[in-house]
Length: 389
Image (cartoon, rainbow, N blue to C red):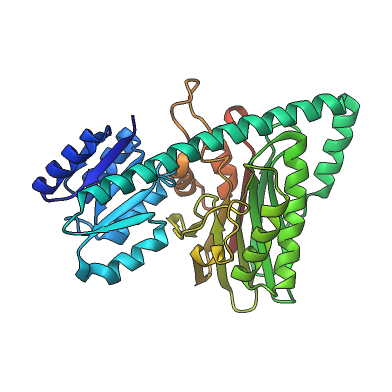
């Protein structure tokens, strides 16, 4: 049975919607405020959110931003309910991947039909991802058996894999720190430093949906493809990700994708800009305080739409002295902190470690120590910090 969360401050509308949806066979949860909507969504993991565009206590765009910032809710379909007069606001909500909308007064037959369509699509998407992962892992198992990679082969591959990783450049006025820790001997994370001209340095952090030999092959291909896209498009971030996405949708195995973040630092003006495609939000650190830079953007390789890149947000700022830009894959925030695997290090752990870093210390070293990464890692982990002195 699919679960629908209804969020509307009008109790009579919630009651009527609940009757319609329960009659259609759905389990229904209710919320009257934006904050309660977030709590209910976190607790019940609904298959669809049906939100009124004007809930008390929080603007609609802020509510959507908070919902999408939750990893467990990032892909849950959201439908909006709005009056005709609210079309301008409704249009702005689509940047947070709203799947549909309904105008008030509601047509309940149309609502039930749309809810049915989107919950079925969501269930099919979840099943497809599970099936694709199982099929892909089965192919990996068969390939590794067929290759009969022995210890000597793996050791040689590991040496070459380590040798191929790029070294952080030395920048006057900046300090670049790097953690690259594959889970196992070969990893699916990748990173890169690409000079676009004498002043502009592109920095890339990426994560392939896979591990082992196949993950290493795909990450090497993706790293070079993104590097090529950046050079070909002269650092135009949206054109670069459009190029990379177009190529990856054709080349990646079914169900695979590439999460990445690409930033460009102008070492002369100290200007920074980036796009984020599926990896955790980067952090802008000022002294020991850190802000998550939230912009929309899904992974590369999943959509063949020509205008896919237009849904990806771009962030720009100027790095002041003692400011740090930190990029990371999800390996560090998903590092489990207990044997029952119920508690992750999460972004809160990262920000706490940053606050606890001694004056002359390094952020990454403190993060690694407090997360107990060496003992607790359950995935590849990559972190790059760029500090203006």
